[in-house]
Image (tube, rainbow, N blue to C red):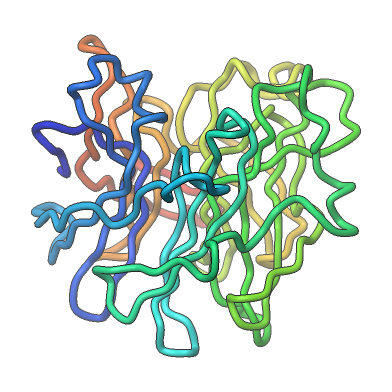
Length: 318
């Protein structure tokens, strides 16, 4: 659906501005030779569409800062939305060269349109600091491959004024490393000042990547993606080994409590990863081709219809 001849494309996020769809995506030049190196050669692209199928590419939207800076090594997955102030707000993951890209933090840029962005100050808007940082794994060396704090998903608080942020992180004090993955949480009155809160969900996997929280027919769902090599022992014993792809949590409230639903994951059969649900002639799932007989795909696949069953679970089978 969305591919570039000379770049690999992977994680993406979407926004409808009232007229057209916008997609932001991670991209890296194929000239680097090995798609596994894409994470360290990344910029963020932008494309627009009327139908989610035919896309017009608009070039690079965001790239790592000029060093030295907290985000001078990589700029990874994020989300985009309009604030009450009339500006567009762009949240993203950043890492620094000085830290070997091992410490992840969350950044913020703003724009008057959806084409150009200016970082707010130095861009940094949230880190694992403050009283609630004790809930998160910050002493990560020897336990995990990085200090996880990435993939921010930001939305308006449906229950009152202010804004909510969800992100991929790891919880502190968990004995099994593959049981420490969590959905981190933060709140803000204005999209500018953020307060780190305790995680809204912990356990089951070593990491729950690329969360997206949305309401469908009155029920709340938190999508995430994962790899079976990061599945906790108790989870595998209870549910069996699950496939790589898109899973989800359910709740009656965006603040939780969140729980794993009974039944299958949403999407583990076609090697689609980092998927998002959007509303366009019904619900559609959009994610990138992760692998297959020819190796890493590096393009965003065609939209797949999503359905909500009467019991509140999600499925791709109509």
